[in-house]
Image (cartoon, rainbow over all chains, first blue to last red; front, side):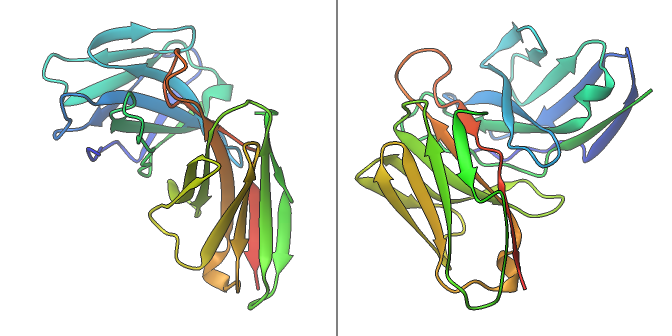
Length: 112
Length: 116
C-alpha cells in the first residue's frame, strides 16, 4: 500500500473552509484514496473515497489532480463538531484482500 | 456504530493475566478486524478475518490471538497481558463485492485496556 504524508495538525475557525492535503507519491494505478474521520475515544468513520478528479458528498469534497500524487479533503464551513483526526488512506479498495493502513492522521482543531 | 458492539468498554488488569475482548456485529458482514490505537497514533491492525474459516495476522499480532466463533463474533485474547499492551482496542467490520463502497469499515466504540 502506498505511504501517505499529511500535516500533523491544523487549526481553523467556525464557518471557514478547511483543506487538508495528503501526499501519496507512490500511488498505484488501481489505488483509491479514502478519508476517515475519528473523534476522541471513538472508532474512525468513513468520510469519502475517490479515484480521480473530484468527488463530493453531503459532508466533504475530495480533489485529486491528474497525476494522483496528492489529494485534498475539503470541509466546507466547519463547525466545532468537526474537531477530529482525519486519516488519508491509499490502496486498492476494490481488491478483495484490501486492508486499511493508518498513518498518524491530521488533527483538526476548530475554534469558536 | 451501534451495529458493532464491543465488551467490555473498559478493563483494568494485571501483568500476566489472560484477557478476552469480544466483538459482535449485526451488519451481516463477513469481514472483521481488530486494531489497537496508542495515544496520538493511528490504528494498527492486529488480526483480521475475511470469513469464519479465514483468519490472518496483521501488523502486530505477537502476544495476541483471536477466535472467530461465528460470522457475527470475533474475539481477541491477550494470553499473558503486559503493560505495553495498554491501549484502545477497536473492532471493525466490512463487506466486499456487495456494491456500494467496497471495503468501507465500520468500527465499534472501542475497549480501553489498562495493564498494570
